[in-house]
Length: 265
Image (tube, rainbow, N blue to C red; front, side, top):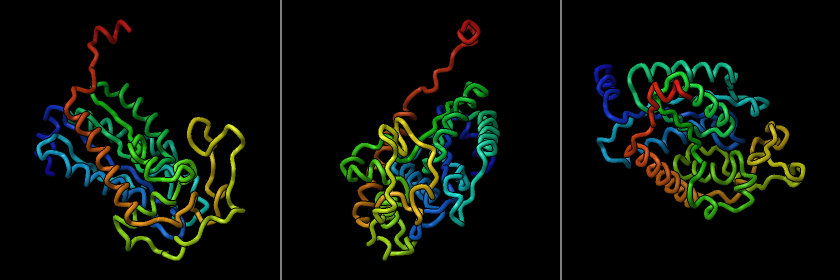
């Protein structure tokens, strides 16, 4: 896209930019450091390709280093501080709003920075009221995942386990470096249970570090991973985000309040 094309795109009704967010962090001995970035980019590309051609939606360059302090005990992991990531996203978001774009979607595939992106989205909306800001997590709210993945993996397969490994086996098998690891289950002595009523994620989460839970960097069980499951996961993800993007693009979101309503509030 050239700058005149960017100017024209921003002026279109409902103009929407999607910013893929990933991470540079360990994903066990078998998946690459760029796993989250790879998924956010490639699922987004497939989703955008499935939309009608003239919909006013475009993809920004990926943010491939994110907030990953939980993985810093493992070499190769790079992490920005929360302050740096918040500042970066705020600066870029303000510029996007000043260009005249109407919506900004954070298409995030790293679970560890969901909270930061949700917080900065609200902050941006206050600073740029005309810009709709939508923080999304790749794996959140996708219909059918519970049917594709065992209950234990849905609850405990947080990192480099069945879902991510199967998806990578389907999308880029050459990036899965250690086939022998797929035949091994996490040793029983490494399985950590949270206190009753608490969870690693969910309603009552703990601020865990990877080394609390795993010496390999894998949290969950990758042993039954297969490309057929990966293909089904890809299909579920693309269909879900196609549906949500279509709904957004066909809407008038965001509802812009008048100055009178804002001042009276």
